[in-house]
Image (cartoon, rainbow, N blue to C red; front, side, top):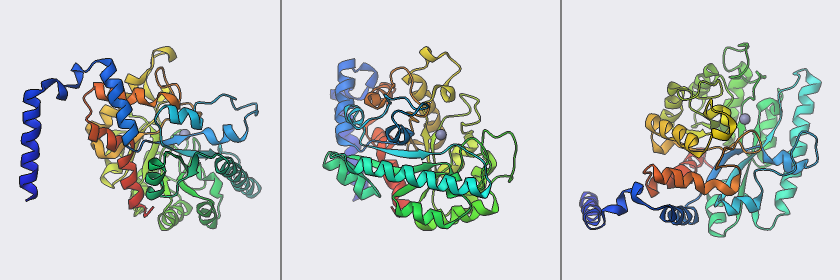
Length: 361
Ligand SMILES: [Zn+2]
């Protein structure tokens, strides 16, 4: 029966193509048609960005190291048709003596509470803890915030901190930042310290699996990535990374790393920072360079394993995708390249929803 339905569906597509050949040829769409189509896609499908560093900017708007006008605000997200984002509490890698480790945990706890209070005071925004929350919020036109931590430094050397962070609402943790920590080796660190995942790191991965906290491998070294994939029972994601074959940068993913993540059911979320995308000067890097990385990742792992992690307010953004209000420009570029509506639905959110369910979230 299913086969007959599929066959009939195929015939109806073919006959439609014969009558309206232009319908299926995106290159023939005018700019106005592409904009219209992008608007309707963003209205209909769940759209999610898996990484920004906006929470600390919102928490500390006047701090010397933080800009006061950022790339992500809730009104900008609405304007760009962006329904949800993972907002990471970022902590740079600091000293690892016991006093500094305790301070790191306390700092992230404090920033998390502060950001939570801000979100809770905002009437059209809600914290999403699972796939149902994301879908319900979309239906009710409420923006979703998913809480994350960038750098497992925050866990210090106390495994019970994971459950504490989960109870505070955290659903994803990037295992490390640019330097090695107690958990693992980082891709930008010149030294290998643990030869990948440390003994403590193995416990961290197992506990994150138990609690249903997403393991984020952006910033991890290649050896760490493969070690994690050996230990983790749940699929993992790289929340904001580019393609190494296009831009030789240690933060980017090699083809075999992308394949290994995807084979385990995980996600490659393309970052938008210009240093990850291209050698070109700032003014020349634009949305088409992001789409080049997306095209390449799609070719390697397929449409079911890719998405976007802008890294806004943390180095992300290029010409044409300057902030969260410009997200539809990416959809327009992908439509121009022939991506179908169902492919875009997967890219923007369906893949992430499936991934969340695999974490039992
Ligand atoms: Zn990062």
